[in-house]
Every structure is written in structure tokens, then in C-alpha cells.
Figure 1 (cartoon, rainbow, N blue to C red):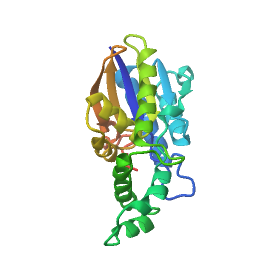
Figure 2: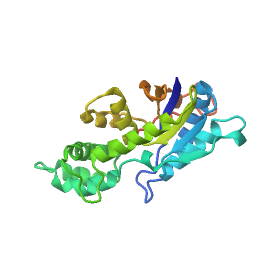
Figure 3: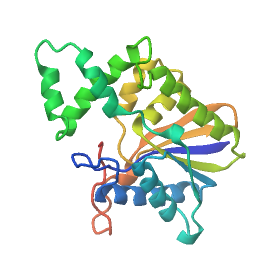
Length: 241
């Protein structure tokens, strides 16, 4: 069996003018994840990343810290099919079509740029609504289009993997949620719940034989929890956004 580790990107720069870059904490998360993956699986045969900045920065840190010596790190392959769906566009295009009888939605919208909690609540309402749309809107990726592209990316990666090899994919929570939902054969409506609980730089492991795919673990984060007192990196690195 071959192992495929899906890594959610490190903490990005929420609340700043440029979200799509790792925060200082996100860099530390990525480094610790690289060391963790090397410890449990050895050197990766290949590392694949979405093309977003937070993906590539996370992948670079994982590659650098997941090899010994660092000069032997595996080149990173970029596959845009592992990019996150455009959450900001979803919110901007769809929020006006949602009912807001008590004004809660308007409040969440005002607070979303500065409050992670409000953003998550807003995203949930928009995401669930988006999945129910019967037809794709102009210039807006539909759920079926999104699910198909991430499924195709996974299928291509698996079909070109060698027996027993380890691969790492650095991507986003929505992609991982969709892939886990598909692997487990769950209804599409379960995808948001799988997205919401994912932590930055958590690890999800898929095992496969080139055709059949099984879920071995989901949203592993023990490597990010507070380390033993006195350790050089004893801070709690668990974040959701």
C-alpha cells in the first residue's frame, strides 16, 4: 500500500490586507509538521502543493524540515486542482440571496473581516446554500465542479504512485473535506462538517493500492499540541484559522 498525507496549510494572515501568506505561527506549524511526517513516514517520494501562496509556503517548510539533510528535500510539484474553492467570492456572490429575517446575517457580514468566529458562522451559511444551487453561476465554481476537479487531482496522483511510496499534498480544508467525503462515500452535505473541524497543518492520511483508497486518519494534530515543558518549541500550535 502507498500512503498519501493531505496537509492543511499553516495559519494564514487572517485580518490583514493579504490573507494568502503564512503568519509567523503558520511557519512554525509547517516546520513542525515536516519533522512529524519525516519521523512517522520517512522521506517523501514527492510533495505536491496547490498554487496558493499559503500552500507553497507551507510545502517549502514541510520539504525543508522533512528531509535529512535539508539539501536533499524533494522538489515541490504544483497542481492548481488542489487549490481551495474561492470562499470570498462565494460569500460576496451568494450572501444577498440568503434570508436574514432577524439581522444575524448582516451582523456576521460586518464582523467577518475581524472575527474568526463570525467568519466561520457566515461561511457555514453560505457554503451550505452554495451546495444546493442547481446550476453554476457565472464565473463561480459550483459544488459539482469543485468536487470533480479535486477528485480528478487525487485520481491522477494515485494512478502515478508506486507501491509503498509516500506522497504529501499541501492544500486547504475544503479540498480535504471533499476528498474525505468522497473516499468515505458520505453525502455531499457532510462536507462542511469535515471542513469546519480541521486545524491548520493537521494531517489526513489516505492509503491506496493504485486503485482502492481508504481513510487511515483524519485531522491529526497531536504533533501541534503543547510539547513537554522545557522543549525548544513548547508553545501550543493548534489553530483553526
